[in-house]
Image (cartoon, rainbow, N blue to C red; front, side):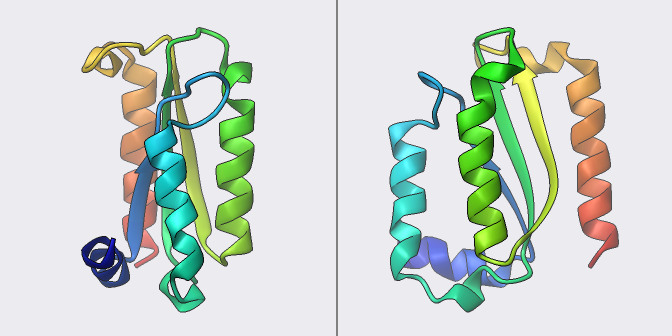
Length: 117
């Protein structure tokens, strides 16, 4: 985690992603977030965040708990949420390539995050 935090400190823009498993993030992603407890808050303040959340379910409502938890965490830590990208129905690796609207939104989010640099 020390090396990851060092990389996070050098980056102004973070893309955070997790699929939705049973209405929440994966255990690995949640463990990653939980490890932020020991990190200085200045590491997070002002970082621009893009959230990427694929979910096998076709209903975006299924991601509401994951989106809420991540949105609240970003706000609490003084980060700037640029975009939340949901990919409902994207269950398999690479499947998001079939979702042109999600890819276009990801491109726009990246452009917006860079322009704020």
